[in-house]
Length: 216
Picture 1 (tube, rainbow, N blue to C red):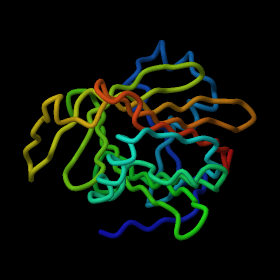
Picture 2: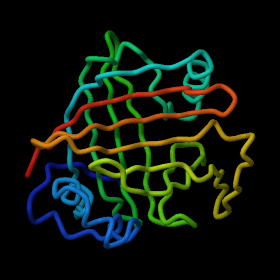
Picture 3: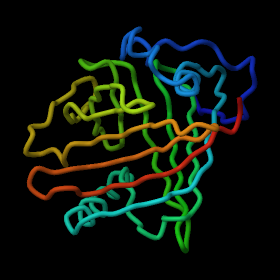
């Protein structure tokens, strides 16, 4: 069934304990109220929550350039255009009505041409409790933890799903260690950071984007 995106209303929101359960009660209660609010609500009926912001920094090495270009063959899950710095960024999150998960769409403006749009799906399943599907059957099992004023999502392993089977990829086939962090900055603002590191090639890609809440 086609997902319909519409503006969020109070009646669309119910309490969500999925991220709470992943980090545990004690750790959850150490988070700022704003972080608990963002990750503690579940949307109903195809509603979406939207965060607007700007890309504040981005860097990559030569290996990261080739990897991000190659990844465009499966939908472009990595930021690949350095001209997105100081350009608008938009993130929308929509509940997966057909399953226990969320659809995430990240849009990054560029100096010219259409913005880069990254689609992914978070599902609360698998050995770590949460997995992110990024396209062409490729997924990442994530481990959720607490960082300074926020949450961190670190790759545990990569896998390829073929129908109902998940094939865990060996370490030598993985693109590197992925870390995504959400750090609250107060005054409805938060910093979204993505870092991909390789043991062989070092830091491949890093991006920081500053967002703010569009609703309270």
